[in-house]
Image (cartoon, rainbow, N blue to C red):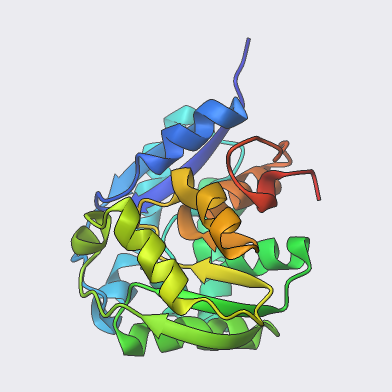
Length: 238
């Protein structure tokens, strides 16, 4: 039996173990390949990381897996280009890969639309200036950020070492009771196994970068997106 495959281009190494964890619950193949650059959360480095040449390398690595869709699994390496630049980024990736493509930044936008959430709080691991670029990207898509906190962590490697307790503390400290959902935007952070615990604690949808990236890949591939253990976003077909 052929197993459906969705491809993900993931920068360096940090929290890629979130993908097989999700795949086991979804019954699909989530193929992850890696591209490499400096993992610093700073604008020049992020622009380089999400460049057409690097993403073309990722698409070439995925090609033997014949994915039904490809997602650039990096939030900061997409929103750093701004709304128009991020749209051009995924359009180029789709043309290169020959299948539908998206990125984690757009995954957040589409996931919020699916849930009917327009007011959000953001719990970012990034430095302040990078976190503000994410808020600007959301605002350009008519999403009202009611509060934003940032942990000021400079590198993806450091984010990948955060414990579940530290992730939970970041979420709790930066939630806004008036927000419809809480967003945790870094794909370098291990979060997928914690989503339902966080949602029970906060009493609202919690959208984390790797979870929405998986959901977006399934969405653009036209594959089912219902699974237990992955939070409100995966509760039904929306």
